[in-house]
Every structure is written in structure tokens, then in C-alpha cells.
Length: 253
Image (cartoon, rainbow, N blue to C red; front, side, top):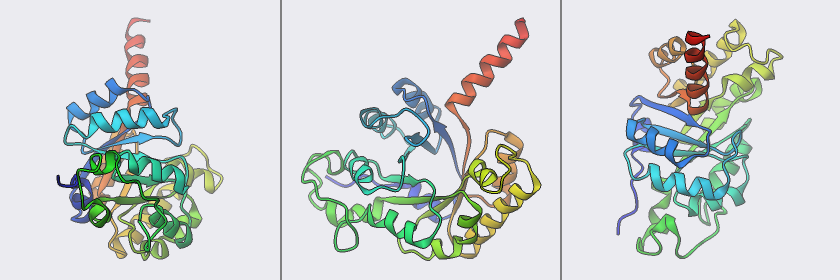
């Protein structure tokens, strides 16, 4: 059998626009709905959502049956969790809160087998289709996509160094934590916050790295796409339900 091809990795490498969504509800049916709709990438969030390891597995099984790419955001830059998620068949990992090249290198190494990294070896699991992909260890690196989140002022200033780390496939800018890092928590539209986001985007462009971002505001999402972000998440399942329910209720009360 052949290893699963990571189309998302190839698309962002070619700077083809990819529209995504955040999935926080830890629910298989929601994962299926988002996949049926056809988002290019769907984040299974473990950092700020109650997804446990079994729930991540079942969502991977569902999403990978469609054309969407499941992107697992791990809780932190920690190799044991990354190892487990990779062995379950995830191929795109989003690492939160990476601030410098040392942390970026640690992220990459957790996804690589020795001698390039520290990923532990499992002989038969979902990642190699239970042992039927006989050359998995030689090909895994080609299909694993490593995206790091730069979500502080310090991280933005270090993007050039982070981008220089071999194996970094994309850089995601986190608006909420960027705002918090400069004492303006929640002020997403603040001029200084937006300036840092644009600074980060320009650094990504200069270093030939695709940039990603999340926003629930349509006008900003469209702006970011025009500005040159490659992979843009345009909302979350939680926010879609909450705001839709809120607006519906307002019509009747």
C-alpha cells in the first residue's frame, strides 16, 4: 500500500489558497459535516478545546475519508503527544506558541525519526495502515506538514530565524495571543495588533514560507487573503453555532 499523500502540504508549498475552519466541539458528526461541506483544512484543536486522544482519532478517521486535511493542534510543543498523534495517522501538526528557532527545531524533531529527530518507532499502527505501508519510515517525512504558531511580539520578530529551520512548512499567526502579548488582549482590530500581523506576513513572504491565520470576521478574512495569507481559517464551529443561535433568538425576542 502507498502512504497517504498530504495534498494540503503541497498546496501551501505552491502558495495555493486554502480555506479552513477551526473545530472545537470534539464531535464526530460536526467533523463529518465540515468535511462534507468541503473545507480545505479543518483544525482538530487540542490546545483550547476538550478533545482527548480518542476523540482526535475518530475525527481523523472521519475527515481523512473526505478531501479535507485534518490539522491537529497539539496542546503544546511536547514530543510524546506529537508521537501519539502521528502514530494515529495525523500528517499535519500545528504547534502552538513557538517563539524562536530552538523551539521550532524541537517541533520538527518531534516529527522526524532518528537520526533527524526523536520520534519513536511503532511497527504497526494507523500511520502506516497497520504495517501494510512497508516503506512508511522512508516516506513519512515527505507527507508530514509542520506548522508553527507565532503568536507573540517576540515570535513575530523571530520569524526569519524560525523560517530558516529545515522542516518548517508554514507559519501561523495567532491574532488573539499577539494582542495579549502587547497588553491589548481582545483588541483584535487595534492598529498596533494589525501592524504586527502584517509585519509577520511580510517576514513570511521574505523567507518564502506560507502564512496562515484565523479570523471569524469576513471582511478581515477577505483582506488577509488579498494581502497574501496562504491558508486562512474563516471561523470555528463553536462560534458559528453560538452566533447563529444568538441571531435567531433575537428575531423572536
